[in-house]
Image 1 (tube, one colour):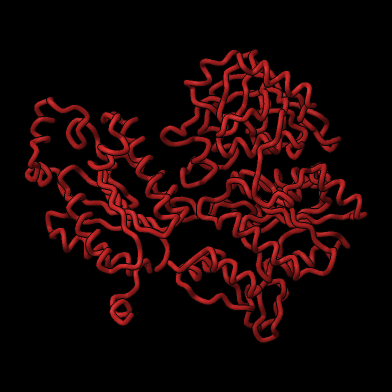
Image 2 (cartoon, helix red, strand yellow):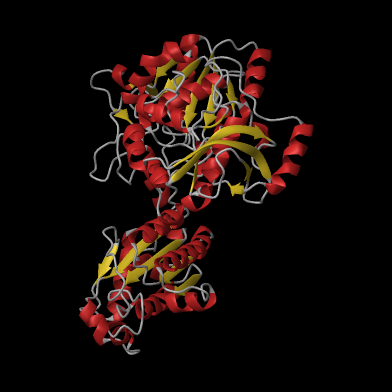
Length: 583
């Protein structure tokens, strides 16, 4: 079936998709006979913004015609400007069981029904074409590309579109006083008689330069400031939203009285650069804003796998400016602010006097300072903001970390992991846990075989346990074979978002591994007695992103462990040896 979700005129009233109590009870009762879909984190964000009208004029997840039109032309099938596809992505195993004119119960991870989706379309999109059209690339290092093309079990090839009836909004237990819907903010601005509202989008902490920029922008149009940070899924290495929101709250005291409002946006960013900037402008218009600050490289994910920027610095500003009349919201370009050391003040970079000494610190530089335990200069950020960041982001020498081994059977993973365990316990300072491949198979994954699916699930379980250890400041040593690149990269993302991650590749040649085989597994595999044996009847994909590579045919296990310890010291995860003895 091919259909479109209903569309209201752009710029009209907010689309409110939440039904009344009687209809909600009726939908819950009827849902007993409907199939259910457990929403992903990103889908929960999308659903909430659909239900509250933040995604007006959408009235549901897009059908095929809208999806294809948005991908190719940044417009819905009706011609209304909309740059980002909003679809319910599901695996084929689920999509092929759904009726094209049926209804699905959409549920959160606890099984609570949030909405009914009246299905109008089911299809298998061309995800590579979508990535090229929407993001301008199919490079998997782009977070938006990785999300839609997917990896492992997250690979979602089908899409479902249709009209939504909302039963209840997702429940948030954090910062509830700051989670305001578009209608809430519109009413608040009307009550305060704020006729011009300047929105500032951010997914990072705000510092003195941002404060100066937003004050200047509001003053230029005699407007009120809305600090509107995205607190859904952002870039994997971004600072967590709990820390950021505490920083934003502290920042409010630095603004002129009654000049600023803070509200949280449950947006799952796509990091889509220019298109995303247009999308953000539409969302802010729905929240009642009249002006929108668009930054250089707005919503850009940085550099691609070749080291080149995905988007040019001014592309987002140019695209929003080209559509601002149609959008009904005015663009305020983000002017790079620098600190003039000689004059003790901030200034737009293009207004800095000749011969002045402009200073700046990038977000990545600040994260390095936090990791190294270096004091953050007061000219860069307010002391209370620095203290808040330092509370959460401890120096690397006190952070949790995972050392994740990979290599063929017989490469020496278990032996070196045991030696490394002893070395780290000898150094002390953190709890150390060894997750050996065979031990994990016995206690966590005893029901698994050696198919690719089971191997990936096994790595996912190891990564989950290691992420909890890392998050809580411990050291996890993981020693599985981990033959597949995608599973290893997923483990890096899962764990790396919470602490340190070091991939140690034991590149020991296959012939050496066979010679060491005390259990005779290689010979059995070559005789066909053991199936799916890595390196013989099942592939091993050598990593190209290993942090340390060791050929154990050339060094002893103790030398290998020492090399890893030296690597951890060089990265700042362990104190230098001299300082250790001194302490």
